[in-house]
Length: 256
Length: 311
Image 1: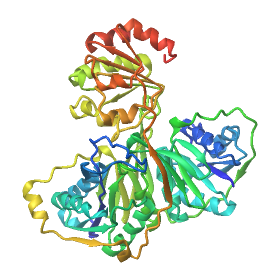
Image 2: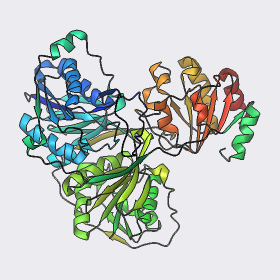
Image 3: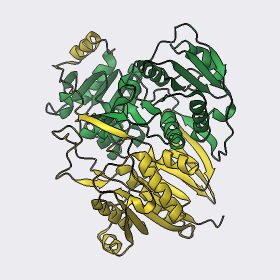
């Protein structure tokens, strides 16, 4: 076993809770956020869980799990959750209510990776608000590190990490030595709930707040959102009474 | 203005349908389209790609591109874009495209646009957000546009045109540290993401035994892939790789048949772009009937075996 200690960085994003159907605002500029429940992005939760499991399975291997959120000051809530579930320290980059695109997020994460001397970044494959699926790969590109996206299984062996990835036609396994970027897919694990005791304990764990400028970054979004609208509604079709009617209707629609 | 499109091949050495959809999207930009094929079998894919209405095919024949590792492919793409001055780079929004495109973006300092479903003009695109619950129209300020294309929104281009010229491009040396180990592809060929017909089971199937007993024969009769709702996965009826929805797979087959699925928001987000939707449920008020083209209210235990028999 190699003696390289893992210093894991886990970015977590605050998003509208996955169980809530987003409503588009009247001005058609985005979705309504007032009075809406926010939670940790489900894929970030899986990334956090994986980090904590790595630490629990081989305690001596992990020096630290550092959680990062880039968002409004309310994103402290998701960092408190991350600390309650097992992260050791945390940083909020407070960008106010501004939306920040993946390229800008990745630039800030790169600065934090360098500052924290991280050698493993585990992050969700995508956030369920903008659905970009980019941040991990851009970060890997900026750092010139290996990337293993859509992880279904992660196996550590000293400095070498084997990641089995979800791909369109099945799964594939890739291997790389640290430092490495991993993005997590749905099947990797099932995140735990934070116990009340751990939530209380987490209040004493470090949570620092920075501004983008503290990292030497001036946020410079590249995409202008011209409009956000409802997708065309599907109108309900016909009801049939019997299997025979169903089959003849399918034939009529040339569906079979 | 010139557009470069990344073309993938499948295990049997043909261009993937999603790549042909990406060419359709690239063509809509109205500029000459160059196709890029890579890997040790690039020579055999190139002739097919050359007949897909493109003006040129670039071939990077090297085994190091065989598994489309982003660490190898991205520097190659970056080099081609810089040397030949491409203004647009388009990939299918496949697992390969999603892995490669942002890595190219990192080195070009560009904000990519994922999963486009419509091209408004050369720098303005429509893409789904919130799992398709909203459509955003975004305009890019970048001088190079990088976009991935959602295959279900663009019909695959025909590969019966006249053959465009094929050129070799030089490969790029990298310090790649990632190694491909192995792959395990779904053996039956009915992959949920690309299957033309999907039959999906929900909580209404009550247990794993009924799920298998009713869904497997129906799927094999229709040559369909099997999917499931989150409720069915959470109840242990089937593996979570089958989950359709916001946190699972997003599908848009020609025909979707939902069996015992009520139609929770997350599930609808994953299948509502299917061409024809059939819902079979005993609850006449199930929300899935609001999006279904054909609805049948009935007892699954009777309806499904009868349907399987009569199809």
